[in-house]
Image: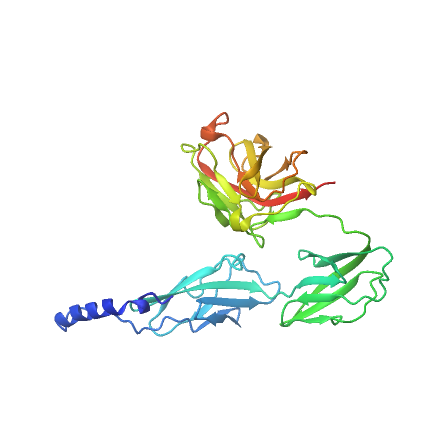
Length: 368
């Protein structure tokens, strides 16, 4: 946003009156005409796409390019400066979720850009045969699809959705023999990406339902007493939770009475049937051992149950995956989920110190 370009007409007239009244050779007038648009933004000679209307820059670099220490080369208008400076290395590893902010200064004006640098990538986003959907694993580029027993798999024509602008082979609409795994290839901006597709006869096993993961499934958490930060950088990616983002907040030991945590409800409510799911799991990281509580409710905050699991003193400051059992006699649909990482108000009976706490990878686990 070009901040001072939006000064109201009243203010401009007021300032103009002041400067007119002053001696002509004293002081400088406000410069509201300086250019604060970035002219070019390059990473390894790859030109970024600059959108001056919404203040964004996107740079697509070849697959395999390291993003942890990228030093962009920035071209600016005359007399302008930028922070961070051109040639100054920045960590763009997570910029697809949290862009790096650049600010251009010139005269009395400044302009802010949010910059994303990411590798070129083409993906298959949907793979269907008949009314069956494939299970896509983007981590290892594999797709598994379950078809009814007795299906002739030697001549099937999948319906595929994939990155716009990519060229896929075999071509959509082709009839393919899926007796053994089939490799699909995406060509996109000079790069090639492959998926292995496997057809399995039988019914698809019910998988855990991922409710929140901090990266691409990030419903808004309503804060309970505290403000929830999400996505928030994962402070420990070397353990069992190596994903880049999570949910987090700071809890004050002095004002620890009652609920402190986050809620998924209202526009972010869930719809989980206890007849199909009998457990929840969630990753927790904190500095104090003790009970973690999940409260489940039906819509309208009715039919409440309180589920607890112990965060062990053996691995303080590390991610621990905790499992919470839904009561066997519960039949009411679960619409609201409240997560409380520490369920000992005012440090009783477990001593508590003010610190930042984290949770991630909230899942509903299907019945066996």
